[in-house]
Amino acid sequence: MKFEALLEVAAKSAEKAYAPYSNFKVGAALLCADGAVFTGCNIENSSYGLTVCAERTAVFSAISEERRDFIALAVVAVGEYMPYPCGACRQVLNEFCPGEFSVYVAKVDALDDYEVIRLSELLPHGFHL
Ligand code: THU
Image (cartoon, rainbow, N blue to C red):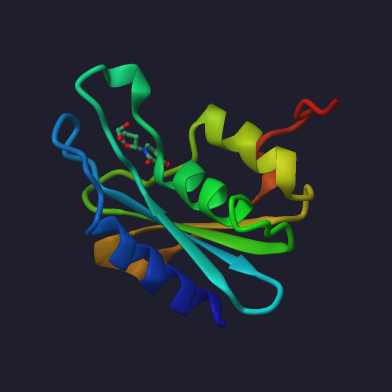
């Protein structure tokens, strides 16, 4: 799958976001080596700290299906802000992906203007046991 198509899948997933508190809808699409794609959206909660980001929803969905072979992640947001993964999501990605893993980030209204960032750039010195 081309990365432009992965961004389109992430944009579709953003439509499923439950974000009544921030009104910031985010979708993620995680590409596996065999072409399988696992999606996620952000899911907020009245108890704000329980919110889960789109990236972690996608990663946990894939891991719960026993997948490990991740190629790239696309993250797309509805609105004016770029959905750069938060610190918690960077550490979760670090658990399962190598430093050269690519994260594609874009706004839904400008998918062509995506940025590609390596996990090692997002999280230098990520923690491992
Ligand atoms: N959010 C994501 O889902 N992914 C990101 O990359 C940035 C932030 C969500 C969490 C929360 O529901 C909302 O965006 C505002 O922080």
